[in-house]
Image (cartoon, rainbow over the protein chains, first blue to last red):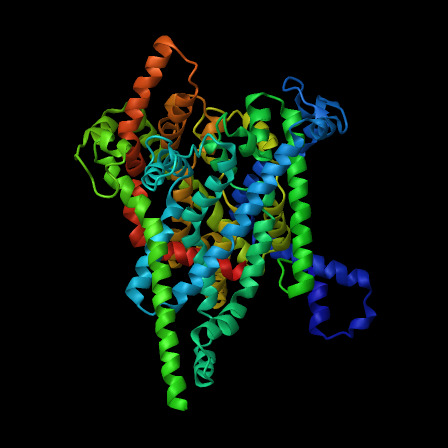
Length: 328
Length: 303
């Protein structure tokens, strides 16, 4: 078979005489040859394939327990279907709206405060011509990114302690009463967002600084000749350059709105601030892994993931329509 | 007229510069102050720290905290466990990530789109906490070392970064001529591609290594045997749970005493453990900062 194909090609037979089927067969033969020739590549990718299959796709199969009454003894397949029972129970529960409010509240607060700051800091760093000072600021502001979330939570708790924390000492020095930051629910979101700002703003500038380095210096020279001030040059040259980066990061942030850093929330949570610190993700952990309501918790988690996916797709759609930059 | 506007410009430039450097100095101070405070607090007497007398430089210097840390078995065990998880976990990460990234970058790899799609989809949709937990449980990994390393054996984002690196730095001619010389794909990857890829191996090892070092959540849900606790779980007890215990005021008697003595211990050692646990990262960070930044930039090209 192979031989005839080769001779046909060599003698330059006019192509139209062959049927579609012939070409399909020929292409398949070539593909098969490539696969057999490169069989070792499949061995190289096998570990990654197995990893994603076992730890990402098997859990996706397991999502069905959200629609079942899962009993560990009978396994996923044997457990009984209950339809949307768990979802309805969740929607009807008294804590449903609190969870939604806290989840969205913390995320949106974080987005509004945390999104512009790296941009401002990057623009400012970009204007600093003193290289040593610039490097020092970068080195110091990147560093908190590497502090573990447990140490971060420990710092927050220690600094904000009502009687021993340094921040409350400062507040008292200014003549005010100490604030029970960790115990008063109304402070929780601010504490969460501000500690995140402290930890991540510096690291967030890297991507913008990379985008800013792509600005053509000639554009600035021309603007200087035309008498543009520093502000004008930032506003009309630098900012337009980084807008695509901003849009992409904005989409990715909105796509994460329901899945914010819940590891930190879990650590900062305590019975007194629960009212404003209980978010969907920590609730799933509590209900599923601590209380053992696997099916119910999986349903809540699935609800969260679906909302998240809808948000991501819509924001991407809006971005594509309005700015021609989008993830896909 | 012209000269006049020129002078004006210089003046506005100076004002701009002043504000810009003030802003940067403000940012620098805000980030730096807590870091200095922790270092100073770790070697000051707890009384001076808690009363607010110590606010910048160490006061009543004492190394009692560090002494207690070095005598603490739980911290030592956690440290050793974390070193083990980080070493084993990072090795597995590299063994999974690098070959996969290389293969996905090969244009002549049949099934490239299928595998890429299969991996990237997990960025947007996942089984979620409970189904993943059940898989790990059914595999019998609970309370084993493997629960600490296998569920995070690869990160799709890092595979993408490594793939971009391979595609942009390994010339395709090199691969072609190697193949003509009868070099197998294994040989090509291990003997030619990997030796040329030291920078990306470093970046990947750093990204994954820091992740393992700092992670607590896997241990929280998969490990209940205290002998297997990583450092971050021990830290959580010292830094976070002690504080919570202090808020539940209803405990009485010997229980309250036990909590109280633990709190006192925590008060003395808490700043020290923050430093001790972050030390390895603090030491390597200045030398490796460049690589971290490179990693993020490669990622951003693709993002």
